[in-house]
Length: 268
Figure (spheres, rainbow, N blue to C red):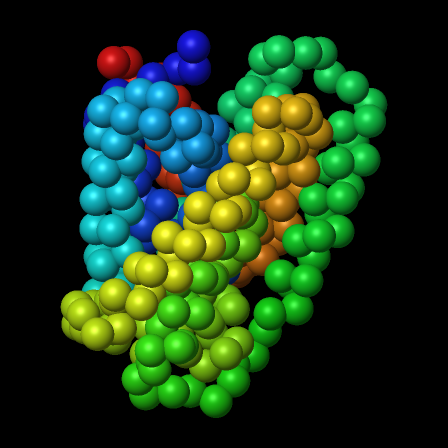
């Protein structure tokens, strides 16, 4: 029986995962791993009809908080949060790093460490390395078309399920990011519906593949995720500045690590 997290843990984790889906460079999937919700999410979706009431309750509650985080992140990034984006990246770097010990423990729950897992770690790093190339921005669009909205949803689904993939960076590269923020913060239903449809389609497909990998190759799968996570840290981490902001940057980094470690000890 997998550990059941309390509602307080899931609520805060869902909110932060949602905000991460909006923040450039960050990955909702990585935070899901850090908060110990990645496998429970996969199992709830893939085994939905075995215990529908319990799984639907878990997914609905978590989904509401993630959606709330996405809206909150979009509203904040459209306004004042843009001034503190660098500090937020330090916070999310800490949130990612804080989950590494639990990730390693989870990998070794059912079997001892194997040297071959390191090859999966290297494979995860190599697969995720193209994320480092996502710099710059394409031609900015003012409003997402229906096809662009659906494609954005597909990307969000992949970014939420595949740890280390930052949907926001991809959208920035495409020039769709400002229009995406405007659609979410303005609750533009005409764009949100195809976004939701694309998200559901790609998230389910990715979850199906991920669940099979975790069921058959648990240790290898976790170490591949660790590879994604390390690349994600490299992408998110903005670098320290040797001035008076250094202490604020260190404080946000330590706060992120502390939040994840404390959440791991929340009691039901």
